[in-house]
Image (cartoon, rainbow over all chains, first blue to last red; front, side, top):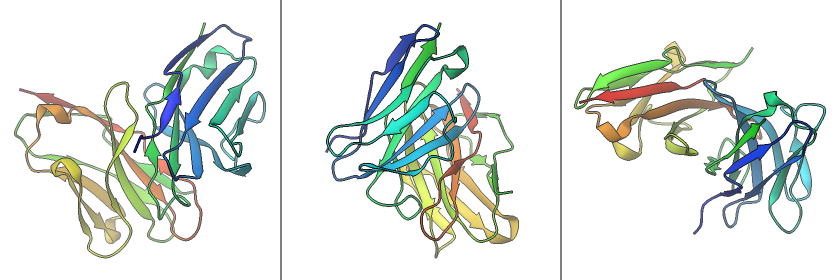
Length: 115
Length: 114
């Protein structure tokens, strides 16, 4: 049973470009979470999605960031017009049910570098 | 405000020595509690979790944690550290009851010296 997959593992973008980060949850998991980790900091919650629904986006910046989890295919975190401050590691996690009762399983992360 | 505190940013221990990593939380009711480990360049792996019941929880890789309600703490322990335990450790908390997002502490980096 494959774990949570994220790609790419490393992504370099110039300022102003778009970044697309993909996450395939574990088989049987329909709940996906995105986190951002800045150097020397813990993980900060960004968004929680179920298939075709955004459940909680309270951690998402208001502009330039969006996320989706379509009926088919991976979850996508999209960052438009990237800036240097977007450089971070972005982690996806999945669970079979709501977080709390069900622990989250993490992917290896995508390390975004904005030059 | 709800918060999770890991007061130690870096800890260095000798191989074979015992280890205790501290985690304190500030929530109204007893939350669900987790410890994760992150090796360099990797994602997070769950070490153990506490939902209810026995306050001493056993996890993987020889780790255990004890929930102390009176101290609002959930400290992680290991009797004898191995060099492969060098990593960053994160305490995480979720308020109990329905969906709530996970709040992570800022992490403790563990260095193991021979």
